[in-house]
Length: 435
Image 1 (cartoon, helix red, strand yellow):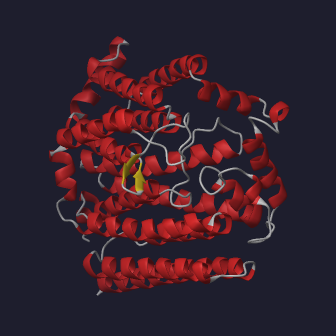
Image 2 (cartoon, helix red, strand yellow):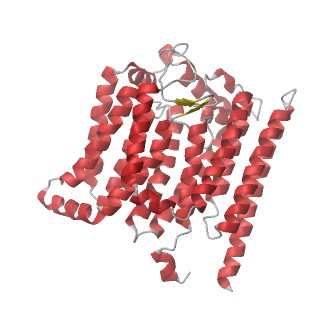
């Protein structure tokens, strides 16, 4: 009887979390509708969010009853919060985001309910990697920028009126490839690390993958000027390689490579030099090149503890606030309490994802895949939140689930779908506990 009682309790928790998320998003949408002459678009976006939340909850409960009950409600809460902020700042973009939300939740359900998706990622890793490299090459050759500016980075491929960023798709592909490769080589890698610790030398089996990923990150940085994607991919890969080997020298060597690449990029690329300069001292150019980051800091200060209130602040002074600086806009109108809530949501997502990885301690691929996907989401969130607070140079990545961006939203929900799939698998820990 106990398993059925536990299952019933977790279902009730799942429903309660969705109700709380729904009430929160409803309150935000209602506040915006009161500040606008026409609020029909707000309620259309809310209706889309409700439909996605209900469809996801019902299908996951029916076909994946043992899944982690926190991941999907947290993802929906953050995406709903993002819809509120985007509609507050740029209503036309909120309508597009709502459209992408439908596609993203559909992708989550397809991935979570596909019984062989993890096996396909592991077995066909080289095919998937080849597709990722072809996408990267296509972006370098045919890349476009929706803004149309001549000198803007061309990070998008277009399909008619739709644009998507291949670098977002590469996040999942490269994490899956690295998890498959390192999982297959984990025993040999740990043996090499142990032998290397005695001889004080690093094995080519450890150095080779690190150098290859470093070179791939440089390619992304040089040809696409995509500092965020290059940094994110290399940092997450370092964490996976350290997890697979247990050798601290991997982190130290990787940090050295990052410093070398950063110094070279600072002297070679104007966009990197600009971001470092305004990070070190933005105030002399507060009305020029550093205008965006200065306005972001002022938004945090104006928000105070409780915020100015939804629709009552002035986040529109921040250029492109609905994308790169959505965290600053959120901080101004929700205040420190809102910032803490967002941080808490990402912290809980990270803890649940790492718990799923720990449950697969006897399966290297599944453990590394769960950890890599979790770190990809969490590190990306930390990078952009630290960037808009001037704790790190701006990298141009989006805040997962919250920022405007169809490609980002689709990939983030797909990652959650894979984590949901991993959370339902029969693990050695569960078997040992009799569940």
